[in-house]
Length: 206
Image 1 (cartoon, rainbow, N blue to C red):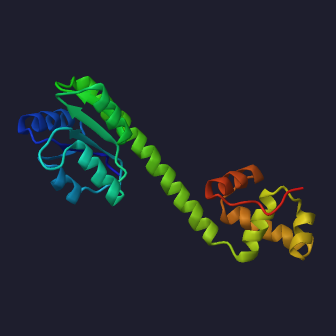
Image 2 (image 1 turned 180 degrees about the horizontal axis):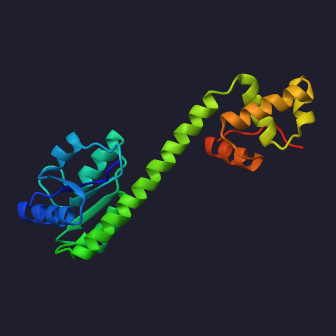
Image 3 (image 1 turned 90 degrees about the vertical axis):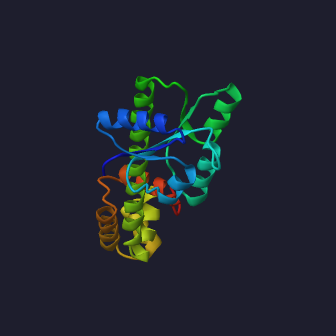
């Protein structure tokens, strides 16, 4: 999906300047004069980031960050302020900011921060999608296949798996093959990595 940059600043001239810079670089960017307007309309289905002024009436930068956390919108934050202090920058990072810029912000610094924020968000989205796909694959396993998977990642051989399941070795091999296919695992180490991401514990190991 096309990355989106949101800009929240109650100063019309600053907001327009930032939007013009982003549009000139080919970004899709949307501006808001108030934090409340942004929070009520934000969509984070694809890669995005927020460039937000720290000092605004009603919702300031920290309040915007708190509202995003409350609604579960995990959006990279780039804070801007004309009155930056070290304690404020520390508080901004604790609030989840990926960058803290002091006005007047150099265009190169802002564009670099936006590039890095969007790249990081895209990577996190990809990881979340991969994890969702893994969960869906695991959900497609039958109860017997799930037990086979736990035994396999525990290091048991086909004969040992068969003994644990009380089936023939041929049947154990069949279950294991189906597990590998459904989990899209190319090898046993691959299956183990999938299980670790899903936080699936092995049954036992020999």
